[in-house]
Image (cartoon, rainbow over all chains, first blue to last red; front, side):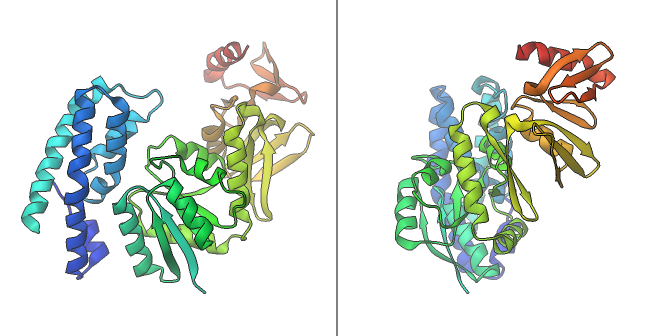
Amino acid sequence: MHIKLDRLDQLCGKNKVKKHQFLLQFLELVPPVLEQVKVGLKNRDREKVRKGIHFLAPQLSFFGISDFTLILGQLDAQPPASLEKLKGTIEQSLLKINKAMAEVRQMI
Amino acid sequence: MKIKSLIIDDNPFIIDLLTEQLRQKHPTVEVLATALSGKEGLGKIRDLQPDLIFLDVELPDMTGFEMLAQLQDITFQTIFITSFSHYAIKAIRFNALDYLVKPIDQKELTQALKRFQSSHSSFNPQQVRVALQNLKTEKPADQTLYLPTQDGGLNLVLKNIVRIEGERNYSYIFLKNNSRKLSSKTLGYFEELLSDKGFCRCHRSHLVNGDHVKMFQKEGMLLLSDNGIIPVSRRKKQEVKKWMKERR
């Protein structure tokens, strides 16, 4: 499993409705921003990629995927890592997130 | 008594997470409204007069600091919410402001709310005003370091700090007027905040302000503007010499 629900379980306890809402929200918010990251990568648009990763990193981290948090750290580092250098890592993360989304779709 | 709060963040997940965490563990904190942009946040602050705002550093239309700067009077306390790696974290820490890292940890939230409840009502707005002033000040030497103390806080303009000396878990700050202030912060804390503002850790126990270094003496000592003489670690000699050369 790529997705981890420990923190969601801790937050929602036995409240299945609340849990379902957070999972649905995951499926609503993540795909359009992932698309934005992909377009940014294709066009070598560093700011677009950074914005997308910055937006998604906390939510993904909450669901056990910390890849974007680590990438964001490198993008915001002094001196910042180049997009070229991070391209492969970002693409691998995108695959992982796609798998996580498929897992969430099966859950709900 | 209820604490009236606002959450200003462009990410609906963060808003929902924080709202749920507050509802479950901190029922005295009432979320009056939420906003997804700086402009929307400004309107809700003016309309609802909150006691506390949770404010994202990086909003789509402006930064959290730019949003606060548009207010004539800050009558509420602010807890910033930000990503761990965000470049603004240093500015937040430099100004001793409170912040939470996304996704917000329940324990961290509890600690931040405890600090909010124990601090004087004017304490945090005063820090925010100093922070906004600092962000407008281009020269680091003219920026103000805000140090929380038992009596409230100390504003120290960086150019007035000659050096800082560490003593285990606390530090002495030596000022231009020959007075010194005691801080409960470690020398490492100051080094992290001030190393890109003209200060240099020349020794395990000493951090010096470049504006106050008069010369590097042959014996491996620094002569300062207050005539103090500070040792330079053997292993730091080349680094300090290079730093002094770059400052010329």
